Amino acid sequence: MGIDKLPDVTLLVQMIDDETIKVEAFQGHLSDPEFTEKALIYTR
Image 1 (cartoon, rainbow, N blue to C red):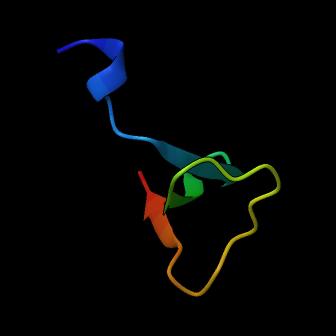
Image 2: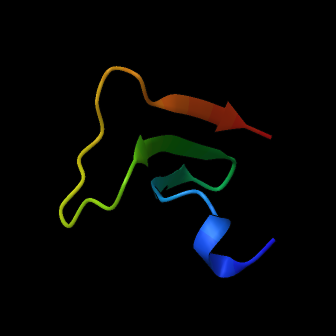
């Protein structure tokens, strides 16, 4: 798979604390993304 076939996405990640992150992926390139209600929270 060449670089021209890779998906074009923006991944936004925020570390909330030592064990928790907030993650959201957006289709295409966004220059100033902000989290929406679709963001996911992961805790380890």
